[in-house]
Image 1: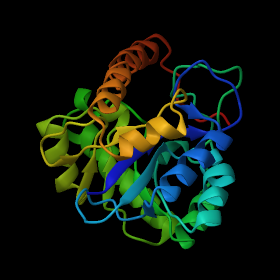
Image 2: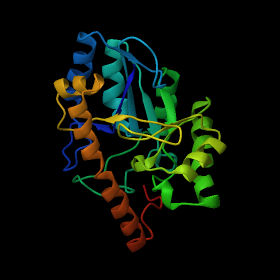
Image 3: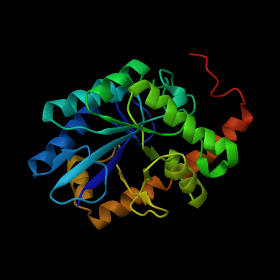
Image 4: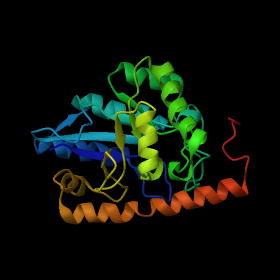
Length: 253
């Protein structure tokens, strides 16, 4: 069975959060998996036979282009990157600041390049809002416009969606399927509504702990699920900050 891992940033810069994995740590993690007989695959279906692991990356930071792609090219692997459509080429002012300087997202040219190299580009919505708080036309806009924007850039169909903060419900899942997505991805070991689960990887993970996740070690999965539960707090803080600062997210860069 293929394990699906979920990363965010892979960068040498310091931040207080747990989602930024150092490039050298990332290289050790994938090398450990390969040494143990696992193949790095780009097929993001949860089934399959043999020893394989799929790598996915949320948010579409430019460190994916700078650090992840070279590391995977060196071992013949591929990955899937989920892009926030309205932040292409911009900094992450949608996020709660946990570093001294903001992180930049990939440009349209970088996205086009990685897609041409065989890396799948999926949607992570337009603005990284908690989609469970949206309804009607606003929810539809987040799903359909992000899909079309990325298809216009890559020239390829975008049929995979990763829910911001890993949060979804029946209404958001149904809206995503109606918008033309065929594969929906959550975060954490459990999922419903046709959503595919993923196992998050954090800064504190060693190559050994990542290998345990790939092997679906129960203790390691429980630890990852516990850490992911704090994403609910991030989602709530993001909503409060948006209300307090309505200009947040408007294009300045």
